[in-house]
Image (cartoon, rainbow, N blue to C red; front, side):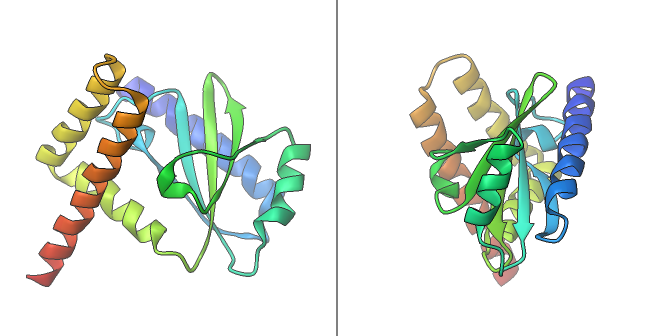
Length: 166
């Protein structure tokens, strides 16, 4: 899995640098998120990159440039990112999904907390690996996988909030 992780990390870096070349003045941060950002989890051939935009940035302005640069705009990425613009580009054999979100939204902290919990808690990691394996082995549909994944991460966030309250 380390080789897989190293390949995805390379493509994340390559794709992020290209994106920054286009939108340096509009982007505040980029974060490698999703399964491919965690060494112990073999993802699918999609690399997800969270792009934090200045709050003054209108994503419709970026959309035209992205399309002109060869990116595909994904209208129905997933329920959690329904308010964000997602642009997909191909890097090697991987699709890189750039998820553009304004700075003011709380999603960045939620996503990074979930990633941290997965990397620091073996029980959480194993539950997530099991969920992904069930989907990969076609024991559950994509819709069921997305629903269960949303519930899993919602539970992680609740447990993190409970720990902070202690």
